[in-house]
Length: 36
Length: 226
Image (cartoon, rainbow over all chains, first blue to last red):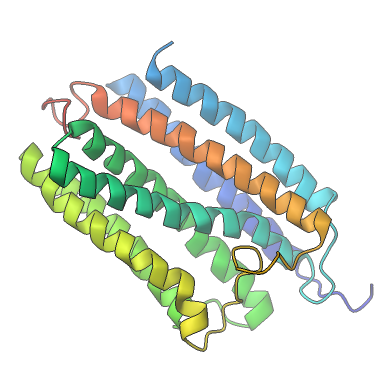
């Protein structure tokens, strides 16, 4: 296992960015729906 | 229960399931030996990419039928699918470079798959801009339909680009004629994630479609074309 690359930071960044995009869009739909 | 409420519930369930996918992918799916933990980006990138392309195919099909039938529901669906497709394309174009940096040593390269995916993203953005710029509902729907059909024609090229050109991007390991070349536990995580992204697409599109039915959703105009 010692030769496995240490790049977990990139993985965490991708998972955080994806969650942020999806939650932001869900909130945007909710707010637009309430405003209309 | 209204359509918007149904969409909200589906989205909520999908987001909870997405949390489960995160737990499974990060804690219970083995680390790939050559790529390391960064390989796990695959479980988000691939389902988002499949739905980016599928959403555009659905936009194109709805657009073709709209041009023949002039049914406003088809135009509304195309608009909803395009907006959700743009969100998924954003995920693809952010997670891809984040994976590329540790694996390829570069955030971006102008190879056929990456460039054509970027073009698809610009088509999505152009589609949304056209819808926002043209005030006449009939013209707006027709102009958008033409863009939607162009986008749909691009999708097969994106999928086949890794076979047609020499690219850095890996070839498909699931969506190919032969059986998937992925260990069982990794394939299960990928399929689970794909199911959740499907649910997210349905929830988002349902909400966006319901939004277009509201009378003042587009500057107080007719609810028939938004």
